[in-house]
Picture 1 (cartoon, rainbow, N blue to C red):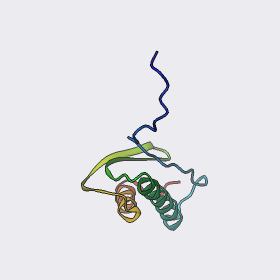
Picture 2 (cartoon, rainbow, N blue to C red):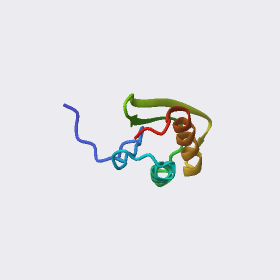
Picture 3 (tube, one colour):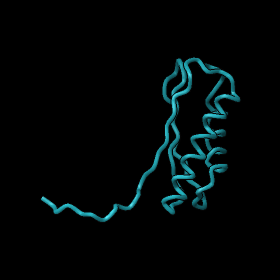
Picture 4 (cartoon, rainbow, N blue to C red):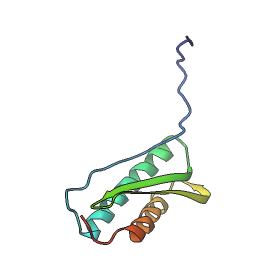
Length: 99
């Protein structure tokens, strides 16, 4: 076996998740949750002195199930506003008012 290392490992991935109340259909409520998650992730990126160039967003809609998308940016970011814009774009393409 390998010896135990006391050195912190390099961060390769980060994520943040949140459950919305059942049957949430108000877009303002959904945006609030997405913005909260984007800002939390951005804060963690900054705390680790990291930036994201690639990412993955997923959410579950009823009745169709999981909607997911990988994304790439031209320039890495740790900006919550930019991450929120990506989530908004994806939701706008996928969501039609279902809970």
